Image (cartoon, rainbow, N blue to C red; front, side):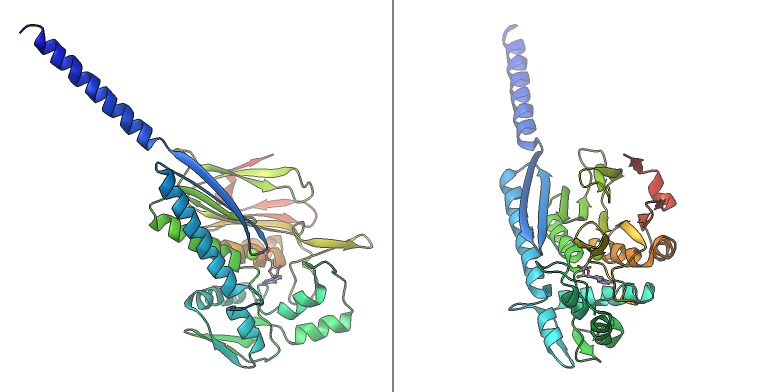
Length: 333
Ligand code: AMP
Ligand code: MG
């Protein structure tokens, strides 16, 4: 009798220990990273959680959603709202997702005094910066391409987009990647993911944190391809960088890159790079492009007009400008 009780206790303890071990093994966080080429860039999704099967399924669904957004918003191709809009003389009805992106783009366009412009499709084609054969167009060609541009000629009424200028070619290249990242994050969240990063070519959104610590996001040095300019410690937020080093060609010692100043039709010359931190990836994407065109002073003023929005702007001469709220989360490299 006197021996049975300790034995029972011992067995109970062993059982508890076994159960605890099982639980730990089941809940040990796993990491799963997958990448795909979408929207002309590398998209990487990295998720953390206990159940590998569930992680894999969530990532597959998130990529499928991003591919769906790409189809809607790419400049040409079957099923693209943007292609239909550009081809139409007066405008057309678009999917709710496209309407949401255009609504946000119109807002950033208005807030930036026209520096952000989704109507630069013809100018983009003329320069061909992202093609095999980019070239510096003649001034007359630029004037002609600009004559058909300007998102001031776009009106949005619910899901109908009206074009006041038939030649207007729509280009969502400065905002659609961010939006696709937001959609991916929405699906990951719905699948119960509480810790993840989604990165579409410098348009990053973070879900939660990394094992109780902030994520460390490296900002590329705009003049040293292998170097880092700064490290940002962030959680549950988006961070987008626009830079003149991303897509460019050089001619006679001049760098011609892919972000245009709508006022001149030439690549914007006031910045080397702009990083924007704000909750939504679509807004971070649009604001980083807009602030790049505006330059450090007006760019920082633009960021101040949006709540919970911070930024790091590297001016054309290399001087960094940081919003006060970001300084505490930034380490220079
Ligand atoms: P990002 O890399 O997000 O800064 O976006 C650059 C892309 O946006 C370019 O490749 C063009 O497709 C488009 N773009 C260029 N200049 C502008 C502008 N001023 N406003 C809006 N979109 C632009
Ligand atoms: Mg952008």
